[in-house]
Length: 173
Image (cartoon, rainbow, N blue to C red; front, side):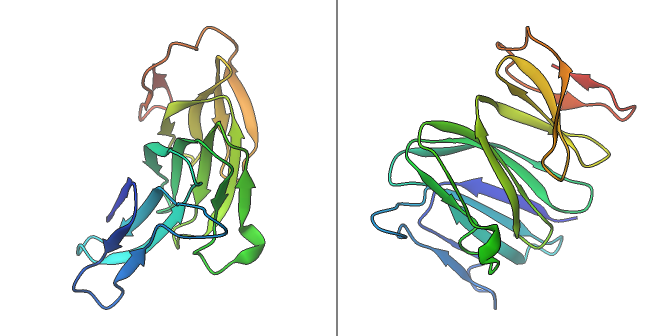
């Protein structure tokens, strides 16, 4: 159960709850974080909220929930962007170059596992095994929860606008 919310910040998550979280537009230097991800429990209570982004225009375009309660987030950053600063695990903090599309993976507790920058599409689909499908450089790739990428379909996928998975392990584009 539970759910996720994503979008731009400054924001308040969990208003009126014990774990009220403010995500302000501030950061290292002049960084303005404009991506936020928040997880809520089945009771509607905030579990955690995280921010990421740059001093430029950033956008979160899709989110997919993994079977273990973590999530993948896809989007685009305009400037050099910071990830993982709020999760209490500084060794997982990451910076990606500006002008990048990205895919990031958070575990069920909101700790950044990894973020990849590259020519990714804006939509993703999570498979039953916890891996994720996303278009990258015209290829449909599968990204494992550990960040390893495998090409599923080589070429011809540049115009893909949406992805969905089927219970039998197949997928739709």
